[in-house]
Amino acid sequence: MNKTILVTGATAGFGKAIAIEFAKNGFNVIITGRRKERLLELEAEILKMGQGKVLSLNFDVRKQDEVKSAIDNLPQEWKKIDVLVNNAGLAAGLERIDQGNIDDWERMIDTNLKGLLYMTKAVAPLMVEANKGHIINIGSIAGKEQYENGNVYCATKAAVKSLSKCTRIDLVKHNIKVTCIEPGMAETEFSLVRFNGDVERASNVYKGIEAMTSEDIAQVVYWCTTLPAHICINELEVTPTQQATIGYNYRK
Image 1 (cartoon, rainbow, N blue to C red):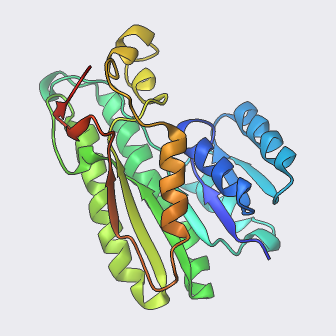
Image 2: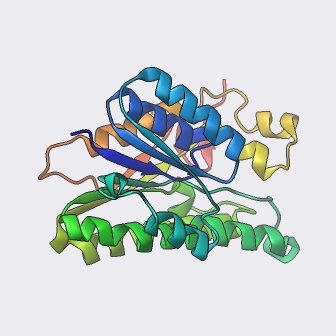
Protein backbone atom coordinates (compact mmCIF):
# COMPACT_ATOMS: atom_id res chain seq x y z
CA MET A 1 0.00 0.00 0.00
CA ASN A 2 1.32 3.45 -0.91
CA LYS A 3 2.16 5.81 1.92
CA THR A 4 0.30 9.13 2.21
CA ILE A 5 1.74 12.61 2.58
CA LEU A 6 -0.15 15.85 3.30
CA VAL A 7 1.51 19.08 2.15
CA THR A 8 0.25 22.54 3.10
CA GLY A 9 0.88 25.51 0.84
CA ALA A 10 1.17 23.18 -2.13
CA THR A 11 0.19 25.71 -4.80
CA ALA A 12 3.73 27.06 -5.30
CA GLY A 13 7.36 26.95 -4.22
CA PHE A 14 8.54 24.33 -1.75
CA GLY A 15 5.06 22.87 -1.26
CA LYS A 16 4.42 22.21 -4.93
CA ALA A 17 7.89 20.72 -5.46
CA ILE A 18 7.54 18.50 -2.37
CA ALA A 19 4.16 17.20 -3.54
CA ILE A 20 5.59 16.36 -6.98
CA GLU A 21 8.73 14.74 -5.54
CA PHE A 22 6.73 12.41 -3.31
CA ALA A 23 4.20 11.65 -6.05
CA LYS A 24 7.05 10.67 -8.37
CA ASN A 25 8.15 8.20 -5.71
CA GLY A 26 4.77 6.52 -5.38
CA PHE A 27 3.20 8.37 -2.45
CA ASN A 28 -0.48 9.21 -2.33
CA VAL A 29 -0.57 12.99 -1.94
CA ILE A 30 -2.96 15.33 -0.16
CA ILE A 31 -2.35 18.86 -1.41
CA THR A 32 -3.78 21.90 0.36
CA GLY A 33 -3.86 25.60 -0.39
CA ARG A 34 -5.99 28.72 -0.75
CA ARG A 35 -5.72 29.03 -4.55
CA LYS A 36 -8.16 26.49 -5.95
CA GLU A 37 -7.14 26.93 -9.59
CA ARG A 38 -3.50 26.15 -8.79
CA LEU A 39 -4.51 23.16 -6.70
CA LEU A 40 -6.47 21.71 -9.59
CA GLU A 41 -3.56 22.30 -11.98
CA LEU A 42 -1.20 20.49 -9.60
CA GLU A 43 -3.70 17.69 -9.12
CA ALA A 44 -3.84 17.15 -12.88
CA GLU A 45 -0.03 17.20 -13.11
CA ILE A 46 0.31 14.57 -10.39
CA LEU A 47 -2.38 12.35 -11.88
CA LYS A 48 -0.50 12.32 -15.20
CA MET A 49 2.42 10.66 -13.41
CA GLY A 50 0.26 7.62 -12.76
CA GLN A 51 2.15 6.71 -9.59
CA GLY A 52 -0.34 7.30 -6.79
CA LYS A 53 -3.56 9.05 -5.89
CA VAL A 54 -4.06 12.74 -5.16
CA LEU A 55 -6.63 14.60 -3.06
CA SER A 56 -7.01 18.40 -3.21
CA LEU A 57 -8.23 20.31 -0.15
CA ASN A 58 -8.99 23.98 -0.71
CA PHE A 59 -8.79 25.80 2.64
CA ASP A 60 -6.82 28.43 4.55
CA VAL A 61 -4.51 27.13 7.32
CA ARG A 62 -5.04 30.42 9.16
CA LYS A 63 -8.67 29.49 9.85
CA GLN A 64 -8.95 26.88 12.57
CA ASP A 65 -12.50 25.86 11.67
CA GLU A 66 -11.51 25.21 8.05
CA VAL A 67 -8.50 23.13 9.10
CA LYS A 68 -10.54 21.05 11.54
CA SER A 69 -13.34 20.49 9.05
CA ALA A 70 -10.96 19.46 6.27
CA ILE A 71 -9.15 16.87 8.38
CA ASP A 72 -12.22 15.62 10.26
CA ASN A 73 -14.00 14.99 6.96
CA LEU A 74 -11.19 13.17 5.17
CA PRO A 75 -12.41 10.02 3.43
CA GLN A 76 -11.45 6.96 5.45
CA GLU A 77 -8.87 5.85 2.90
CA TRP A 78 -6.99 9.15 3.37
CA LYS A 79 -6.93 9.23 7.17
CA LYS A 80 -3.72 7.24 7.46
CA ILE A 81 -1.30 10.13 6.99
CA ASP A 82 2.31 8.98 7.14
CA VAL A 83 3.95 12.37 6.56
CA LEU A 84 2.69 15.89 7.32
CA VAL A 85 4.64 18.76 5.79
CA ASN A 86 3.82 22.08 7.43
CA ASN A 87 5.07 24.20 4.57
CA ALA A 88 2.55 27.04 4.28
CA GLY A 89 4.32 30.25 5.25
CA LEU A 90 5.53 33.62 4.06
CA ALA A 91 7.44 36.80 4.78
CA ALA A 92 5.57 40.07 4.40
CA GLY A 93 7.33 43.43 4.40
CA LEU A 94 10.87 44.38 5.38
CA GLU A 95 10.58 47.36 7.72
CA ARG A 96 12.07 48.33 11.07
CA ILE A 97 10.06 47.29 14.11
CA ASP A 98 8.94 50.88 14.70
CA GLN A 99 7.69 51.21 11.13
CA GLY A 100 6.21 47.75 10.66
CA ASN A 101 2.85 47.09 9.07
CA ILE A 102 0.65 45.35 11.64
CA ASP A 103 -1.40 43.65 8.93
CA ASP A 104 1.83 42.08 7.67
CA TRP A 105 2.67 40.99 11.22
CA GLU A 106 -0.72 39.35 11.69
CA ARG A 107 -0.46 37.59 8.34
CA MET A 108 2.93 36.09 9.20
CA ILE A 109 1.93 35.06 12.71
CA ASP A 110 -1.36 33.56 11.55
CA THR A 111 0.23 31.58 8.70
CA ASN A 112 3.73 30.68 9.88
CA LEU A 113 2.84 29.91 13.47
CA LYS A 114 -0.88 29.48 14.10
CA GLY A 115 -1.47 27.65 10.82
CA LEU A 116 1.27 25.18 11.69
CA LEU A 117 -0.28 24.67 15.12
CA TYR A 118 -3.77 24.13 13.72
CA MET A 119 -2.54 21.56 11.20
CA THR A 120 -0.43 19.70 13.74
CA LYS A 121 -3.31 19.60 16.23
CA ALA A 122 -5.61 18.17 13.55
CA VAL A 123 -3.25 15.56 12.06
CA ALA A 124 -1.11 14.43 15.01
CA PRO A 125 -3.93 12.43 16.67
CA LEU A 126 -4.17 10.30 13.51
CA MET A 127 -0.46 9.54 13.80
CA VAL A 128 -0.75 8.83 17.52
CA GLU A 129 -3.52 6.33 16.77
CA ALA A 130 -1.31 4.64 14.17
CA ASN A 131 1.70 4.81 16.53
CA LYS A 132 3.89 6.19 13.74
CA GLY A 133 4.33 9.18 11.47
CA HIS A 134 6.63 11.98 10.46
CA ILE A 135 6.00 15.72 10.81
CA ILE A 136 8.18 18.02 8.72
CA ASN A 137 8.12 21.71 9.64
CA ILE A 138 9.60 24.13 7.13
CA GLY A 139 11.48 26.68 9.20
CA SER A 140 14.28 28.99 8.08
CA ILE A 141 17.80 29.96 9.01
CA ALA A 142 16.02 33.20 10.00
CA GLY A 143 14.76 31.26 13.01
CA LYS A 144 18.36 30.79 14.20
CA GLU A 145 19.96 34.09 13.13
CA GLN A 146 18.48 37.55 13.05
CA TYR A 147 18.89 40.31 10.49
CA GLU A 148 17.95 43.96 10.21
CA ASN A 149 14.24 44.49 9.51
CA GLY A 150 13.55 40.76 9.82
CA ASN A 151 11.93 41.14 13.27
CA VAL A 152 8.51 39.42 13.10
CA TYR A 153 9.44 36.98 10.35
CA CYS A 154 12.50 35.88 12.32
CA ALA A 155 10.35 35.56 15.44
CA THR A 156 7.82 33.29 13.73
CA LYS A 157 10.54 31.02 12.37
CA ALA A 158 12.25 30.91 15.77
CA ALA A 159 8.90 29.72 17.10
CA VAL A 160 8.76 27.01 14.42
CA LYS A 161 12.19 25.80 15.52
CA SER A 162 11.12 25.72 19.18
CA LEU A 163 7.77 24.10 18.46
CA SER A 164 9.46 21.41 16.39
CA LYS A 165 11.62 20.42 19.36
CA CYS A 166 8.67 20.49 21.75
CA THR A 167 6.54 18.43 19.37
CA ARG A 168 9.35 15.90 19.07
CA ILE A 169 9.48 15.56 22.85
CA ASP A 170 5.70 15.32 23.21
CA LEU A 171 5.29 12.66 20.53
CA VAL A 172 8.45 10.58 20.89
CA LYS A 173 6.62 7.89 22.87
CA HIS A 174 4.26 7.44 19.92
CA ASN A 175 7.10 6.62 17.51
CA ILE A 176 6.54 9.89 15.62
CA LYS A 177 9.45 11.69 14.00
CA VAL A 178 9.61 15.49 13.85
CA THR A 179 12.05 17.34 11.59
CA CYS A 180 12.62 21.07 11.22
CA ILE A 181 14.10 21.94 7.81
CA GLU A 182 15.79 25.37 7.82
CA PRO A 183 16.51 26.63 4.30
CA GLY A 184 18.68 29.60 3.46
CA MET A 185 18.43 31.45 0.15
CA ALA A 186 16.05 29.68 -2.21
CA GLU A 187 14.65 31.41 -5.27
CA THR A 188 10.89 30.89 -5.12
CA GLU A 189 7.92 33.26 -4.80
CA PHE A 190 9.22 34.13 -1.31
CA SER A 191 10.77 37.52 -2.09
CA LEU A 192 8.09 38.37 -4.65
CA VAL A 193 5.45 37.96 -1.94
CA ARG A 194 7.54 39.85 0.60
CA PHE A 195 7.88 42.84 -1.74
CA ASN A 196 4.26 42.80 -2.94
CA GLY A 197 5.02 41.72 -6.48
CA ASP A 198 8.03 44.00 -7.09
CA VAL A 199 9.92 41.74 -9.52
CA GLU A 200 13.08 43.89 -9.70
CA ARG A 201 13.46 44.18 -5.95
CA ALA A 202 12.79 40.47 -5.48
CA SER A 203 15.34 39.44 -8.13
CA ASN A 204 18.04 41.58 -6.50
CA VAL A 205 17.89 39.38 -3.39
CA TYR A 206 19.49 36.53 -5.34
CA LYS A 207 21.75 38.56 -7.64
CA GLY A 208 25.17 36.95 -8.04
CA ILE A 209 24.22 33.82 -6.12
CA GLU A 210 23.25 30.39 -7.37
CA ALA A 211 20.36 30.07 -4.97
CA MET A 212 18.66 26.81 -4.10
CA THR A 213 15.51 25.79 -5.91
CA SER A 214 12.23 24.40 -4.63
CA GLU A 215 13.25 21.05 -6.10
CA ASP A 216 16.44 21.08 -4.02
CA ILE A 217 14.45 21.43 -0.81
CA ALA A 218 11.95 18.80 -1.96
CA GLN A 219 14.79 16.31 -2.35
CA VAL A 220 16.05 17.13 1.15
CA VAL A 221 12.59 16.58 2.61
CA TYR A 222 12.21 13.28 0.76
CA TRP A 223 15.61 12.10 2.01
CA CYS A 224 14.69 12.90 5.62
CA THR A 225 11.49 10.87 5.39
CA THR A 226 13.05 7.82 3.73
CA LEU A 227 15.82 7.11 6.21
CA PRO A 228 15.65 3.88 8.28
CA ALA A 229 12.84 3.77 10.84
CA HIS A 230 15.24 4.08 13.78
CA ILE A 231 16.77 7.38 12.51
CA CYS A 232 15.23 10.85 12.88
CA ILE A 233 16.76 14.07 11.56
CA ASN A 234 15.62 16.53 14.22
CA GLU A 235 16.91 19.71 12.61
CA LEU A 236 18.61 20.41 9.30
CA GLU A 237 20.01 23.73 8.02
CA VAL A 238 20.44 23.93 4.25
CA THR A 239 22.05 26.80 2.33
CA PRO A 240 23.53 27.48 -1.09
CA THR A 241 27.29 26.97 -1.26
CA GLN A 242 27.70 30.75 -1.61
CA GLN A 243 25.84 31.47 1.64
CA ALA A 244 27.80 30.88 4.83
CA THR A 245 25.33 32.53 7.22
CA ILE A 246 22.19 34.61 6.92
CA GLY A 247 24.31 37.76 6.72
CA TYR A 248 27.34 36.58 4.79
CA ASN A 249 27.03 35.71 1.12
CA TYR A 250 29.66 35.54 -1.58
CA ARG A 251 28.19 37.16 -4.70
CA LYS A 252 29.93 36.67 -8.04
